[in-house]
Figure 1 (cartoon, rainbow, N blue to C red):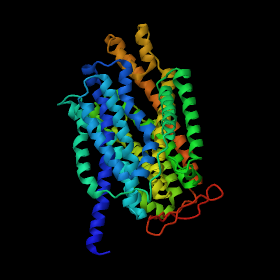
Figure 2 (cartoon, rainbow, N blue to C red; figure 1 turned 90 degrees about the horizontal axis):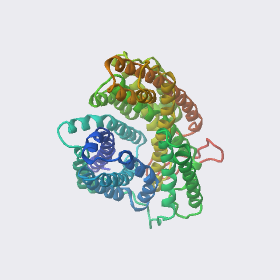
Figure 3 (spheres, helix red, strand yellow; figure 1 turned 90 degrees about the vertical axis):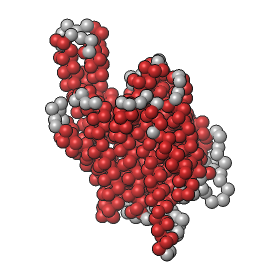
Figure 4 (tube, rainbow, N blue to C red; figure 1 turned 135 degrees about the vertical axis):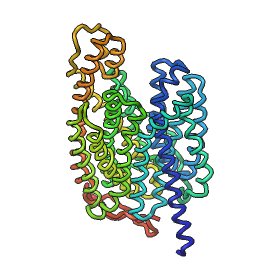
Length: 533
């Protein structure tokens, strides 16, 4: 290859990364900025309590339910085409969301945003896999891509707070539009195509609703459990329905010539081990993010803007752990040991959090936050994400990526439900309220820290201060318990990763000579190395 061709190739490769990184950044910024906009749009649109919940959840439900479907669609029609279609829909729907005149229109627009968002993540990861054929560069790019997604969570309150100080609530959605327009202009010239060779397989119209119903049933049940919903109709019924739908989905996939999701992927121990490791890692990570957001805003009484800035070092650490540390460490230690090392770092940092108090200086919080949500989890999730993509044929990369993303979505939802329940149970069991409180105030304060702060605002000063102090002290006990559980889980997942990924090769190349990694006859046996065209 001459110098000009190599330069053009490198330019296109890194241009692909920039486009995919922007598409990972903007929707996540938008998602977290919405939390700040809800009080403003509530005053404008006057939604009911149920409508407020759907405004917040419609995006996530559509995203989780359609990831597997969109991954399969991308494998059939090409991920560049699907990404550009999704980008156009995301931009147009962002405008509709910003100017929604009623709560019903806003909920519908948020659902459409989730549909568009479901096309972006699996397509972005598949295109990165296509563009980066060198294993070290691919791992670095995937690490940076995932770190940018984490960075967006911290940037959301920063960008949202700045916009809401000067503009109306819809402005937090319009920040998407210039980025989507830029991608639509540059994408056709920069992004590589990744459609399957030959005639694309037909999309099975029975598999799609089964996949959506199964995933949504489980996610909805987990969210209801986290919110303390009715055990029967709110949790067990949708969970059972989701499991039945997923069982039917799996049965149908095993009998199709062109399945939406090739169940044979799960016979690859590298694939299955990486998906499960990523799922349980997100179990701890997502809950930790919410816990520290509450700690900064309701215990330390920081503004959303300051809280968002306080969380940014963790995202920077994720990029450092994923993009800078993971690739060279894979060559030295192997994939299993790097994943396990990242999880052990995270477990140690979680354990350090039990000494954090209301008077702990910021640096005392920054160090464990940087290590657990940054370096540790950045290393672990980068390597598992890279392994998922590298150990499947390129024509199945969309379905593989979507499966991994669905696992992390479910893991995050489970983490919020379980660890949130731990925090709430300890809070309610340890809070010591002062005597003489009205019954309503005592009930609200005994339920949650947010309820205590709201109740205290209506109490005389002699009671308000003790109520808030008692609630914050109880919250710290619950926070310590939840993070101690996260430490134990991260340590357990580290052991699992050592076993499940022990035989995965250090280098999984994607080049011109093709040979797939195949699952062996016994768990943990890998027969070859992926070398794909």
